[in-house]
Length: 108
Image (cartoon, rainbow, N blue to C red; front, side, top):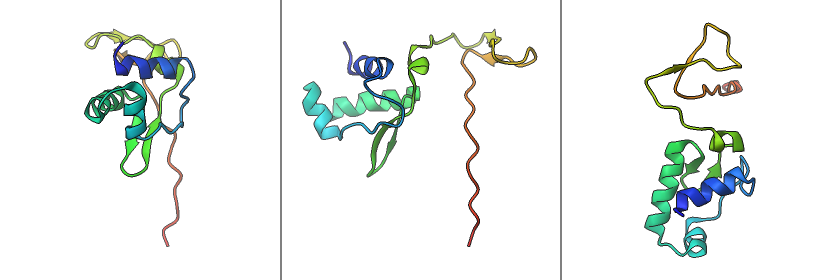
């Protein structure tokens, strides 16, 4: 099983929850018996999938929930209507995600 698959399984089973900070790269590499370059490749793939985010000097955080991990990837180029969307709205091969609005901070 690939390292990416292991992390996806950990997220889908709830061992890693949204907002959880993952262990440092050095500890994860030792835990899974891989070198840090291999671990970084796996984390880069997870970032590309939108399952985790990395902040330099701060760590790697889980951003996806179980639904996102288990949701099948629809082929691009086809148009699908989503059940929760109005009839006039369609998505192109993926679930539309809406981010909450950022709070505005008064400038001093």
